[in-house]
Length: 445
Image 1: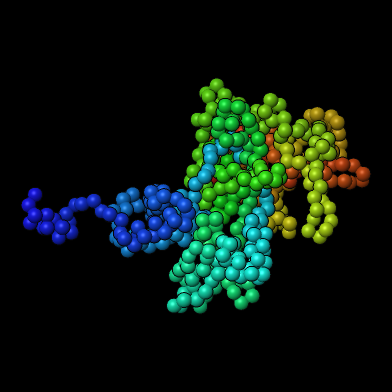
Image 2: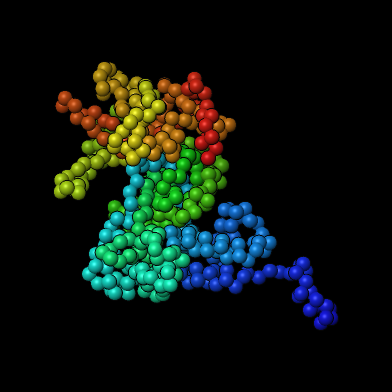
């Protein structure tokens, strides 16, 4: 090709050529990589996934430079919440099944913010130089964050409260991720309970354990299918304290990587993952399953005491699974000042053995209290039929209950109860409710 022709091609805006990332976009990619200790390639990969999900963009090269710059800014904003671009660094694959979701959520940053505030009040410069906090200051009409390694422009007007700021006297500070990126002062989380293990430990060694998955941010209210084989991407706890070693943390894009599948077990073992086996069988659920007739003994053996915030002492029962037949239930919801949703639900279960031990009275059935969150996130009053459609089940259905075992004392008698986190049944054990299937749009979420 002649030099004249090459020059003409460069001037022709319609002449096809491989597009390079705009300089301003690449600058943000590199800045992101430095903050999160990722490679630029990882940041770009995360960016492409983001714009495909949020804006259905399959070919970034067809977009205007200004739009790409705005999209890259959006990703950096997400980074302030998560501390990484891909949301999946240092994760491992766990396999198993969801057992349930707790009814209450809590701020995971309460102690962290309190400690950081105290350190800043004692020594502001020291708190910043140690990387504990970032300190906001005003520059050219905007908030800028002074951190251990750099000054971060926020593009937020200094006439408004900084979006990630926490007030300390006359100053504004922010918490920081280990990468140095700012993080929100409040981080609400909910524990979901999971039975399984890292894929190698599960498949090769048959090592099956119970875990708490700490769902934070947008994952806090993630809807899940209980008792369905699943793969999840999590981070294993690095805590040396035994009481925290069962906690798994998640990335901001956790739901995108979650995959309901049983492809991680051999064909001849897939039937063993049915919860009526997997949650119950003594070979791999001795630490989990308790018959209705043995709940009192299980409570006494598994209860533990703890110190309350007012200096008193409390007692909590163990987390267990039990099985029973539904004798009655309330699925319309009752007002509750103790539940964070303002409502709760209930069902009662029994068995022929329990009724034989206690033919009459309150001991002949076990009350199971279902939180509003459990109701909203795990469909505890419905089951998936063989066609994968949700159907309500009726009384006299056999169900599995997962939750925290409680003990109520009445007239000197111990009466077991459950704070329910999950209910499971299937087409082989359920009787369909006469009102039919779940016709709400939520079933397709």
